[in-house]
Length: 228
Image (cartoon, rainbow, N blue to C red; front, top):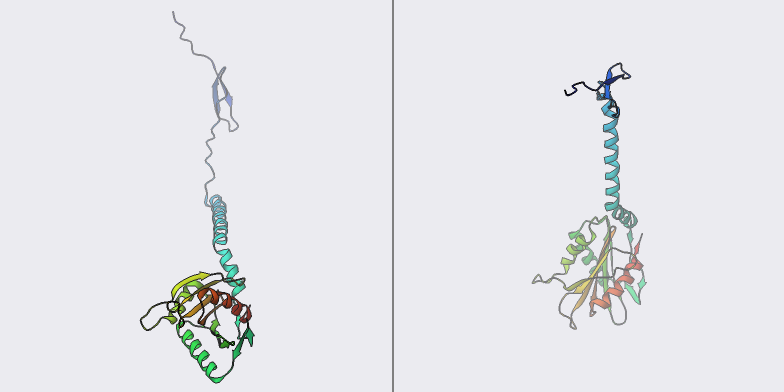
């Protein structure tokens, strides 16, 4: 006859007084407490606060990585001053009434296209060349876009923009600088250059010059006239 006797089972008392059975030869069963986890509002609040602080910290890191360099550039370039020195790069400022009137007309046209805190303009001459520089200072969040806008001042009556406009090296002062020609290169063509950064913007006209020649002189003019 088959033995139907069940194996003996020991019972051990748990810490809360409940008996937890286990079979001989088997490992002890896990004691599941009848006590529920503390999920009261008071217990949930610290966990939510910790999660919120973690999210905010991550957001600060991401924002700093993306916008930190831009903020530093703005701070370093804002508050600039633009003046017209007596001489620069072999050129001398022309203080005649006619030259002052020309400079005033140019900067007035510039101020009509962009709001400036301060502005300055001058005509510079040497034995064989003339340069007209005009610009101003203000806070610019998007310097390149602002420069592209003011360069449209050089459009001719047929609304032809500056030809062969290209970005050139702005030099150690940074920002953006572009140069081009008002018409096809000829004896009557004129090079146009402009710079813009987060604190200043300016244009210069270079009659009978190529864009490459004008770019080098524009960097000299900027270094002599712009102070931060």
